[in-house]
Image 1 (cartoon, rainbow, N blue to C red):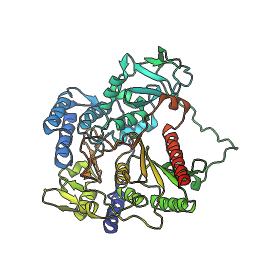
Image 2 (image 1 turned 60 degrees about the horizontal axis):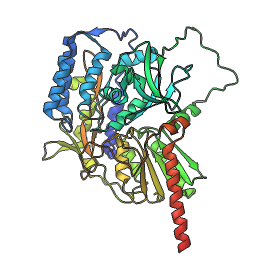
Image 3 (image 1 turned 90 degrees about the horizontal axis):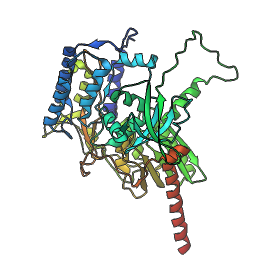
Image 4 (image 1 turned 90 degrees about the vertical axis):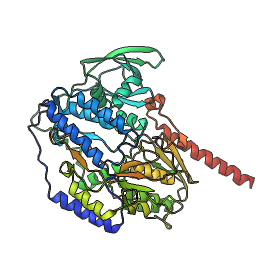
Length: 511
């Protein structure tokens, strides 16, 4: 959640400082970067020690789910394992293992900018299967080795290299941060990039022994070769066929906007489908206004809001969206508090000046000794009247529904006309740590760790059990529907709409 969603005065200060910071900064592409370069253990230990000090000074929920003794023990285990020189990626994975023990989804570990630039230009060999993960189940989504005739979409995997699914997933989970005990978020992250997380946990070989279940239900095994990207040795770009017109700037912009949000109508099933992949960018305020005007003009009885790809964004945008659905006034959070607004290690926190300035304007120290973002805690949002949607609302959520998207779900769940469908969210039901998200850049390795500055509790009456939001109607993934490329959750919603219409028709006849 990069934006705090404050009132106009604070937003102006925030935006001005952002612009000032961006104007004064520039990035230099490091073309000489070598990912195989190793750093000596003493330099890596310096970075690791510094990270722990920064977390202890500013992380608002360092011991929320894991005790201090346990955090110290995990740190010592990782620290003492650094007894030789390591590449950046090897060190990043050690840091990610430790950071995941905090159980904070916003405290994530990223490679250096130099590594990211290098990786974008140099494709490396990787495990060849794209896989959907949930519970103890692994199902093939795609195969990078296109000529392979065995591992097609929908194939059930039972083990890789003799390692069962549960052990495979648990090993990859160690490198992913999540709120509390939200393993469904980790499942979704792995489903987005199984080859990457497999490489973090297991060695890459020329081929892999994979056990699977065929279409007749028989257990079988086969070998699959590693995927090696083919380098384009052509120095000249291939000419674009004259029959293929290039998209205009306006068309490119529209495609970009539609990738973030879109509204379509299914007149046959009597519903509108709104896909929201983010609460950041995308001209969301005007999109929401135009969409609800269109819903009103069409007298649309059912609205499906798909948040399965929405990992969050602006709290203010999520609150604005809630005003079209909520039937009563609401506020964003019962608590939004930072442990300090003095970033003692600001030299390594980017951009420290920006966040220190914003926190000075927007926080107030209370009796608990913490600095509270009072605007988030106190501001009451009222429902819109002229464009308020009063039809049936179906919210689609999943493991990747996180942060501000989770806050939206919490704000509308339980309302009479709202039904939440899908799986448990990745974002915590009780709260999260977010709002301001600067990056720690460790000086020797240059790896980055996102540092949330506020603990946010939207509704303190919820149970603090480390779980995500549970749906009203649970719909788990299915190998059969994956094989058929059918959106099972949408089909369930269509059936719910049909059943409600039938009950309404029956009641109308009785009267």
